[in-house]
Length: 355
Ligand code: DNO
Image (tube, rainbow, N blue to C red):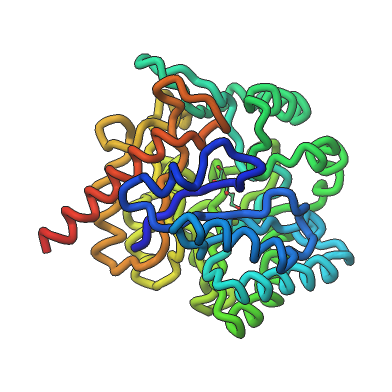
């Protein structure tokens, strides 16, 4: 297990690499080139620059989150082949600079949905929350609301230039049901996994967030069956998973502990996002502090499922609350994620020593 911290790059962050380095046990950065639009090849010189900057701070760069998949690939348009070739070129370029894992997702239009980015908890901290009643509106409205409450930061997967055309995007996806999306996903995987095998790259798909259909959009990475389909359709260790505990558990019928055990055992979890969520009513929830007692998930069981089944991938604390007056990109402040790292490392040390 190697502990990492997601960082958006010096041009898009106020958190410095020096601050990350001071978090005990944080070894690596989960990095990105935030300004490269989906579908374009990531240039070698920019990857090199990012890697050198991170290594100069005493940290490693082994995981990229995300290399986004162009909508034409998900929709299955004839132009997809060009974008798939670009994706393969990006895989090669990243591998050349020592990147081992690429986190991505296969969700149409929205990468993740929360209905409140500044949900106030009784202790005065702020967090992300999802209420089903809150999405009973036009997608344009959601886009406006999310942009207005993002504190001026671009949010991952919510590129303003792309979502400016959200109506058109919905129109383009109108014939894409689960079956079509799954077939397009298979086409994509069959094209890219041989390249990954050749250069030693591991793909790690992020589950759908939330893991059920919203706005009538299809979802194909939402539960055990979908993950099993993914691993079987191209049966290669290069075709793996980003196990996001929060996303999987947002559907209470998913057994997150079982899913972790099974796919760790099958050596398909290359990257883990570990966060806790607290259900309020039905499937509504907010993202709580990491500690088990603060939310609905048992973080000890989560870490134990990884540990007992031999997890040796990269891990990061997922979203943190805004605490101690911090302001920043919702979900991605410094303090609460640092507390998350300390807590997860503590659980891991205890598991390690009690064997
Ligand atoms: C949100 C993240 C997602 C994730 C992508 C992976 O905070 O969990 O944006 O990075 O879905 O492609």
